[in-house]
Length: 245
Image (tube, rainbow, N blue to C red):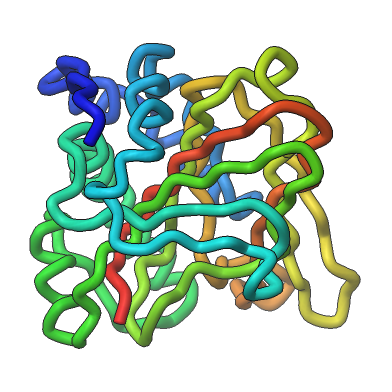
């Protein structure tokens, strides 16, 4: 086990999450299905997660994408208890996202309303039999990529998830852009390519989003992936709010 000290984050990281512009994030989520949140983690905090990638005691599962046809590369699901910085990000960002999710469900004509706290939501997941943690860290080398997919993991899922870039684009890797594709009814699919800087976060739709048309809101489906990394090594942190079956 590697002895990597945790950076001092609380309450600093909590305050950082709370100070993000969630009003602008809501507007972008409704318009595009994703929102770039800006810088969230410092270089030292990014290094903290990367340095612990090989610390197997932290993880419940190690997935090689090629084995399952998911793409090329690998990722690891964290075990409970999560590292403190990850717990902070997950719980602090859930609160504003739950309010956006409730507005989202109103537009989709869904009755589901989410509790204010992440602890309350996780308790609901566990009541549904979904008890395995889903936050993960992903590692891509040259030639690796991630096919378009959705991270649902069971009947119960939160409408949004977050990803945080842990590596420096153009210095530590090239390529590897974040890709979202929206499947629109009676229209061709719409791709969107997003570049992120180290420490920058993005929040995006897990499954469907409300899209305003001529007759009101309707549902469109989104999937996400990562384009091919052309050189170096790319690490990313995935923050998923629901647990898995």
